[in-house]
Image (cartoon, rainbow, N blue to C red; front, side, top):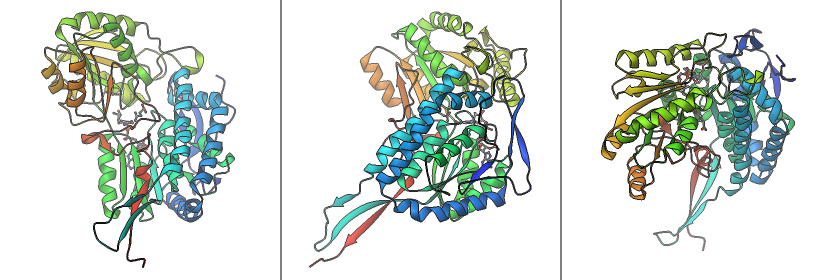
Length: 483
Ligand SMILES: NC(=O)C1=CN([C@@H]2O[C@H](COP(=O)(O)OP(=O)(O)OC[C@H]3O[C@@H](n4cnc5c(N)ncnc54)[C@H](OP(=O)(O)O)[C@@H]3O)[C@@H](O)[C@H]2O)C=CC1
Ligand SMILES: O=C(O)CCCC(=O)O
């Protein structure tokens, strides 16, 4: 297999490539065949504290720059990433497994946050507020929150980093990033390009390592770190929230979802199938906004299931760098086991497999794209995030029942529905308990829109003009008499 030309294997602290103090490394595997791609520095608590200190030292000069100066660094970084789209995409597919077309898309998507926040950084306006008291003048200014820690997952090894780091840097913060241990190579190449763009030493640091507890402890307990931004499971998000309590850090949490995808009887069924393929099978179902439950109205249930099953049966799975596949492997054996356990539980309780249903019998962690019918609300698959290529179809009768089923979860990230009735569209969009709704649309993510959830799906918004606010504090200035 052709390897990308440049692989960075060392962590990146204070502008320098560095080994773990004890020189230890860990293997990064290709999930398509289990082969080792590289051995990467395995850092721990001590090196994380060094990275925090580098970010602390870099902060005063970085925040003193004008927003326009910071914007110019970000624009250069953006351009370098765009120029390197192909090698970055290949590296991403190699360590994460997603099809090359999706990786190319992710590199552009990731870069778009850098371009967007390079612009937004220039627009972090304060206010002038009419005073209720005589002789006072009230203004506000916005200031960078300080040193930021970012912890990112393996499912979007590029874009989940830029969606956090770009607004932080644009706001004038400095960053210590802990990328997921499965996908450090995409993080390190971003650091290399940031260095090439001239972003000063210590402004962006990358701590690679497998000891999440030790690295997480250093990041959450340090009083120097003023904010933590995390994308990952709800379970780990709650742990981090508890750990951040002792230093009262500001937090952005982008956690798990259990997105409903509702097909009403007045929907364009072909459009709904196309939307479901995107919303469910993108990244082989390993996306927090992936449809987790497909709720289909009784009178169109059979027609929709047949159309969806026919479309899903055509999806080809294989190693990203060896062909034009629409599906890649899952990230590891545990992910395959989780998908299998959800299918087994559903079948034991009466669901039927229309297509798929098994892991592929080949190297790597491939699972057949699957459609299940006869799924009910009590099954495991309807209540836990599957994070895999399985579309479970649940039957409903009325609009009220669809809304009740859709909201019957502790998650509240994304929801999707298909309908052509304008009254229903407004009613359902307003009634869904979530942060984002796709209406006759299965692809909702872009840099201009606020991405985030409610309930146990998290706190804060990423992307959009709101995405930079989470990296800034409002300071109120009260002027007494100026006479
Ligand atoms: N919202 C989303 O986008 C994502 C949701 N998930 C959900 O989570 C499930 C499990 O996936 P998994 O990869 O285990 O997700 P995790 O939430 O465990 O991992 C996400 C990131 O958090 C790190 N982490 C884990 N524990 C700690 C800790 N105590 N302190 C600091 N950092 C920590 C991980 O590092 P390490 O791997 O070393 O533990 C990784 O970098 C998936 O099946 C899916 O349902 C997963 C990924 C993304
Ligand atoms: O799964 C995630 O956490 C990343 C969401 C991908 C997207 O931005 O659509």
